[in-house]
Length: 88
Image (cartoon, rainbow, N blue to C red; front, top):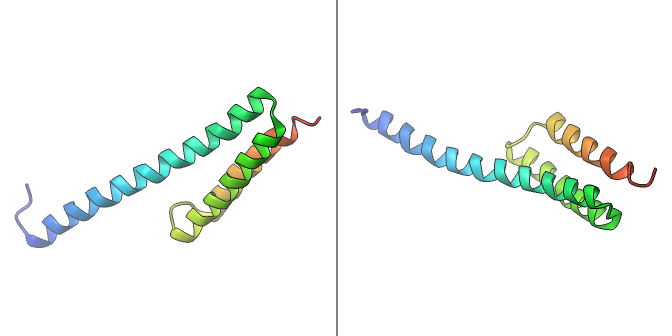
């Protein structure tokens, strides 16, 4: 266990950040799963709505520093490709 005040503070901060990052990571996975589930079901309207929500949230996370810009764009692009494959 750490003995210095600064080390104890770093431990507290790390725990707080880990919890926050885990929440965001889970949310990203759930939004992705929602889109993929709608695509699997063949429901284009529901899939478009889910991908719209995912797009908005992913880019919000870019502004917060949770995701990098290209990562968010790549995820949205892949989801949109799957949604667009429904109409083909």
